[in-house]
Image (cartoon, rainbow, N blue to C red; front, side, top):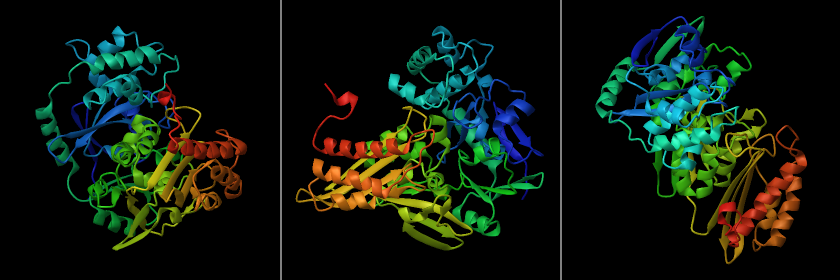
Length: 480
């Protein structure tokens, strides 16, 4: 049934009708609610000035909290959820702990970014994610201060880390129950201005809905689609929200592999990937900013087919398998075969990504993943290199070298792999593999890197892998 968008805003229930499905939460907050503390800085999820806290039932009687960028979050995505803005921190009883820490540390200069930083620190505090200086820096990696006042802001976060969070379990349970009632059952359908937003809650509903609307645009965290609206000003007749399909939000471990549902967020996937190998955890730590990791999904990063997506090269190196569904039929294919050419993937009409299966590393496997970018945090990769080598009798028995940013798709380096197999993984083998890279790839030059730089960086990542396996320190923290 068609229905209004029902959600809770700063503790008050809302029912919204008549606004286009592509209205962003930021536009609604500032234009309709006149809550202007939430700022627009970049309109693409990079600067964090629009940060809000979103809550939803966690399925266990409590709330799942996450900070998100209101500038690329579509309003219908709030249905059955709760959102808090910086105004919600205000109280007649005195300063909120976040406000007090910001004031006492003089952590505001021009003030434009301050609401976003306050909300991001608030979210980290409520989720127990603030413990030391590095955790605070990680938490605000998606927030930009143009006055370069990061030092006092981080100090404020450290002060907040030492402040106990309130026990709100009773309130959380009541709100989770209220939100569940607001959400309702079945496929949520919202229409306005000739456009529709459809939000199924089960994978079977998603399959039926997509089969009925095969030209619809699938939306998960909208970290990509949101920019199509804010930057390209595109219109969509029908959008299907997959973020609340609970069948797609699980991580399962089998005897030999991990299964990630397509709607598992990057933040949720990070811990499990880090268990598989620390390099994967480090790549995910540097994957965009915290707010984007909280919204973007594993399936979305694959399905959009970006040649510079950070996850696909790593998953291809690990020989991951992709599961797609069309109606009742489920198809599986090696992840590397999904990417056909720039802007084209092996996904049929009405077919969607269900899950990705990632094999666990075997005892004789060695793995490495490296992200090369201009900035350490919240930046797009110039090169993402991921390598898995299998060894037998001191020689390379198998090689999977995958790269992002080197071609129109995430791609393996077949020539470089052949140069390594059957040989000791020594300087001579790496030299030959490096020479082969120039035949495997002819990367373009753009604002992030030149052709020569990308080839040199790819070769350096392979040499670093060799040094790592030889026990040579390759990171600043490893050098005495």
